[in-house]
Image (cartoon, rainbow, N blue to C red; front, top):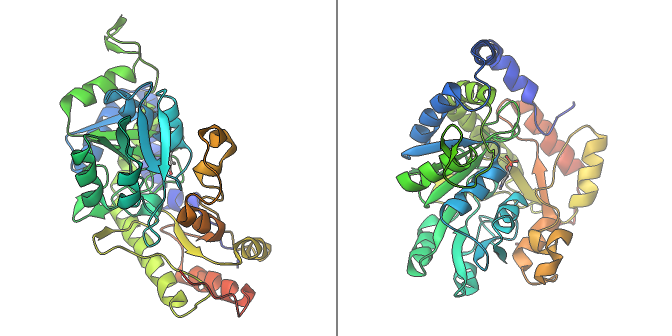
Length: 374
Ligand SMILES: *Cc1c(COP(=O)(O)O)cnc(C)c1O
């Protein structure tokens, strides 16, 4: 049985008519760059997140960059984020001419460890970017408390956490600004590149709206030096359709995760994900840990069970950030996890049969003595 890591075609088949109509409507209205279809999605997504504003942009990466810009991050500033995120989080900091400062993560949630955050704060620290990795929110109460104590802005990287919750509040709505990616493979994915920024702050929202459109508040009257970071009209149309299904898809992902957890529960060769009691995990990625990860991923692929690694090298050990001076051993949890993470196939339409097959294949291939201890 072939099990893909992700099956976007299955999702498309389920909503084909609606999506096709939405795309055609944008084309018929030739509302390609920004425009009414983006605006309609922004209103829906702000409501979904429980925030006052949503600004639709060209990608999750630009969302992060615009958010940091809006709160005034610049040269000489330090911004703290987790070592085990996708590189875009750090790139956004670098492109504000600020310095990314990495911290280690909690071994249960794989998210920013609040103690490490506080220890990394200097007089140059201006902001912190908690990343809600794999679809589970970071410990926002602890992070917000530290941020307020030291006067830091909090920009949530919610690119993997659409609809995730922390004590009933949705991802993106707790920090000063929340950033989302709508990259096709994300839990809410566009049919191309797109991103979104949510906030309750009127001034920042307006600044980001102007910035994403060449700094103009009126056509050809440029108040600030901005950029082109607009969302495509087609993406707005597609995302509005897909947003209606997101809660249903999230429940399907959670059901799939629960079955994986159940089938792997007594197998000491693997560590399964932990859902913190404070929130709701949306399982963008279902990552287990194994001592034999590299061998397993290869052998599973030979049997047409396709897995992934998120991510094999933590940011502090990436060539691109060598100049920051971090060396192996400084963030033991992030490093150990990067060596052991194995992302199993995960998407809403994954069948019970496929999940049983993935687990059976995994257990057949794993060495009996490869027990893992956290
Ligand atoms: C996907 C992702 C991004 C970047 O989003 P793009 O839309 O691909 O630019 C940023 N941060 C995290 C954690 C992501 O997973």
